[in-house]
Length: 310
Image 1 (tube, rainbow, N blue to C red):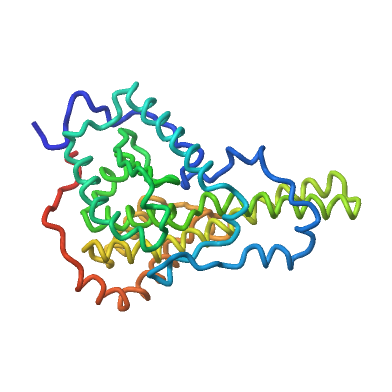
Image 2: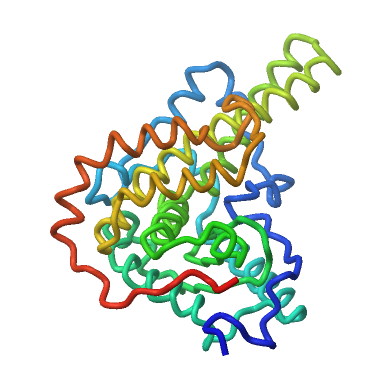
């Protein structure tokens, strides 16, 4: 039997991405947003709320926005855990949840086990997380780490891009970085704050429906901008985590070259929730010299895995 072939694991299912997975953004709890009132009038209040605050960090990349304080970490992590379990149930019902014997799932869990020990110095909450790693039999080019350390890779990203272990580690580090930096929590806080300020300003100036339309568009563009910043931050921290785990940082460049080839016709950067591939590669290449000592000093993996067999 081929190493990745099992008749009880279907790889062409369609499994929805949970709302709290960073890949989809964080819209599910916005109906319960706090009313921040007059404290959000004016750009000064927003700027103060959004100033970066240091985490209990060992890396310069481990800074989290104070927007996270608007939303409870415990509530988001609980909601993420519930959504993750629902996703696993949906996948299991379609025979699209990889069994523990699956070579690609073993690969993902091995790489995660190498990265996770380096997370506590970046976000102490991660020591309390019940980490989970699963493989979903869906052809999407997707992977994520939800709040609370709930990781999922979709089969398509491994199979279609033919990723080696170093490239998988770059994705893993990137997605874990989103969770450590609490980007889902931050985005919810920013959305609550910015929409509250825009809507309040529209009411004060009597803009009515025009103000509501501006709030909708402005909120969307602000969210996109925040998301691009999140992606750049996760790239930077993810490279560090993967290098500490013994995986080549230069694999981030080859990964994004593959992603660019697979995503022709992507929208322009200013309308995208991700930085453009070209700018992403340039940023990574600029970071590589500083990561060489980290990688050289790291213990290297004692196991290597092949991509899925077509």
